[in-house]
Length: 490
Image 1: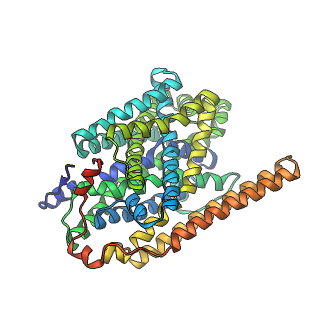
Image 2 (image 1 turned 135 degrees about the vertical axis):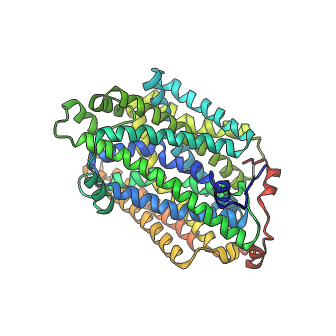
Image 3 (image 1 turned 30 degrees about the vertical axis):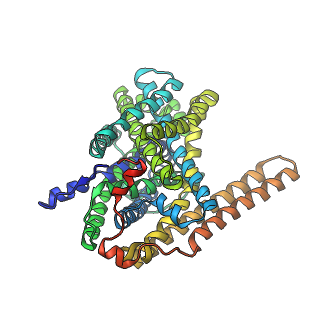
């Protein structure tokens, strides 16, 4: 495995040596699932949920920096730590949950690419799904030429998404005051605001990102000393902050465009109908009608760039998850092919059975799944990065630990609240026989108890002793070079 050499002087070249992993991971915050939830949030609630985007990406910066620190300080990524820390049955559960998260994140990306190809080239949806998988494998082939080449391509795709949609934003002319108010004045008013907020969080913060980023940072040749680890962690924090700032601005642009278009008092009846149920496909008709044909084309280009860049990171994350939890020695191309096939199957079935509407609903479901899955990656990450045995004096500061755990508990609480309230609403409005309602309630209760029990176990499990603080300070922990023997390339 070829590591990326960091040039020590001048400072700007030192920083550029660390640029890449954060931008590669940031595309997961710009995937088509994000875009659809952003568009619908803006259409339904105007600018009022922008504070969720701000909170979500601030939270993402905190936990993403923890992920980077774990990889930099220990030379092992999150999945490897999980395999070493937890017993086999728990590891299999975490592996399955992580794979489901990869599939759930990949569904909107594949569907978004299919929609974009249909808008631009009139390619049938099912053909677009297959082409999305093929194109992703071609992009992943860039790995053969080094991680830097792949990082540059993904960075260009992110810029395409941003430039295209900022051009649409300028023409839509949203209210600057409304945007700032929505960003800094928290509200959850109106029907469906809570579920929309959860969907936004689920679409923004993806579990597989935590596994991926902790592995990508090891691609840099970092001095195995206390100062070297501290310097690398600081540079990755800055790089990640810049990448997430760009992701934040693009997400704000998407929310604001539909917030402006759908709140226009002169909106046509046809466009008003589109606003009530925006999909990645119907957004094309909305923009074409409200803003002109050129905006539809720019939207499709940004959707294509978003889908292709995001599928690369999802497949990449799947490699590390499979290798870390199962220690499978599989050729890289075969692992890529297997991961893509698993991810494409649900999207293809959704298009065949439900058409465009079914695929759009699948995106919303996938975003909610990600929100529920996030704690199963986040809790182990916070445990490991708060551990002196694993991190030495590079462990999380007390304030960072407090804020991170508080946000994690809030996320779990929101998930449970939404699940319980949704279930109660369904039971109250359903005409199922009483015995069916009782069985459904019992099953839902047991599921919530299992959810809470597993998270409690991950939080409170007694820690295994690993690398000592002395080893970490002296740089005697193993480096990432040994990973080449197990067939993982960066």
